[in-house]
Length: 269
Image (cartoon, rainbow, N blue to C red):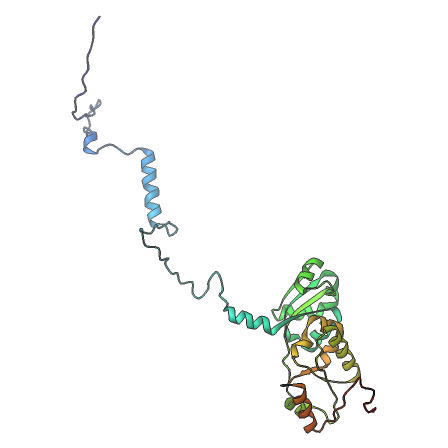
């Protein structure tokens, strides 16, 4: 039995030229190994990645400041000043009820900011829907539950408008534009919206165009306008420092002040 011992010697290994000759290949220690196909593909991908505009760039440790990108004034999120938002909400109110909203649209459509409808009332609001679409006013056709949430009540009548509140006018402003024969209703300590709505409806019926209140917003509440059934659009709120000052201003302008009293000893008209 013969034994063959082979010893690995740390020497360059060269390729034996084949038949027909050729250049000897460089040794592996000289870095002459031909890259494998996978390595060539990886190198090609690396070169494409370096020139790609979509490549991911890692920041150096400690450099946490994001690079600001100019989007030409367009950003993903719009910033609204909280103070501006609070002021807008204070200037807006939600009104509802089909008759009330129809009258409001006919009287002051520019006050409408947004609207909600249920499907069944939309045929009766075709004119309003066309106007809102033409004037870029947002409106939504929703179900009963969504409308109750938007209006804050189940007694919405199928429609709700978000509107800009009217500001109260002063006595001086009112007198300048009043007719020769005029009648104004003054209310003190009346804040129930249903009572106010009923009074506005009566005022509209009897031709009383001005209502004196402590706060003009009282006549703009959703419940008051719904109860007025459209009458709110025929009266204007008048405000002042106090009811006494307002009555005195009207008296000086030539109005006769007539008051109601629960005292049986008061004079009858």
